[in-house]
Length: 225
Image (cartoon, rainbow, N blue to C red; front, side, top):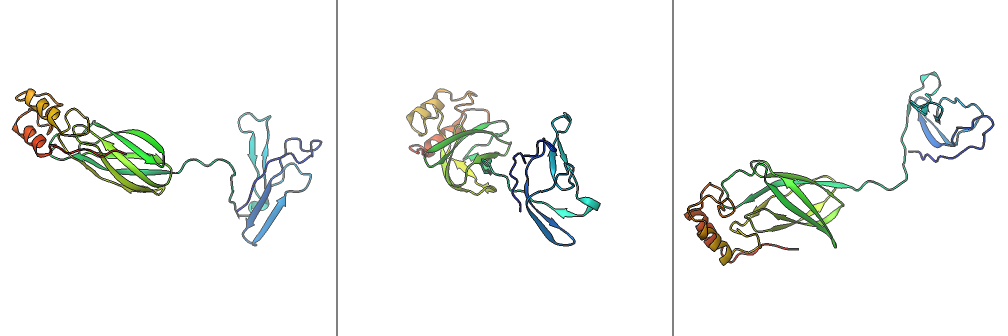
């Protein structure tokens, strides 16, 4: 591991474009470390990177060790790190839903502390989803997909991959996060037709099956943060 600190070496007379690099170099063989400022007046030393602004194609030129000596380099970069991301993936399905989820979009909200981020994910035919979530630690994930009630789960954002499935309760026709009289009336009003919103099982017709789903889940409420 070595640290690179850039700064002029004060040799403007001989090497005006040379930077001061503090490095550690492991040589093999023999094993050795060269630490500290690179010294010497040779602007073309064989073990540093030189900035050459007069070369517009590649102003940074790297020089190899003499005699092709093998070496191992590592670098520590100081600055603001990129946010760590976790892939959250799995299935989003709705009980009693027989249609395809292909092309349908679900709203996913992720809450960490007081911060809530909102994502839109496209589903596969089977309901597969995947999204990249910033941050680490415990988070609440709230999923919304019509005609299902909102569903919440707690996940641990670990910087890797988290598998989390959601099965939503069916029957929320008007998407107010409760299955009640308004949803029942919506199905009855469209009974015999093909209105997609009232066709809660998505079999292409509003019929007894949709009415039974709403009646079975009557009174259910969805999750919230």
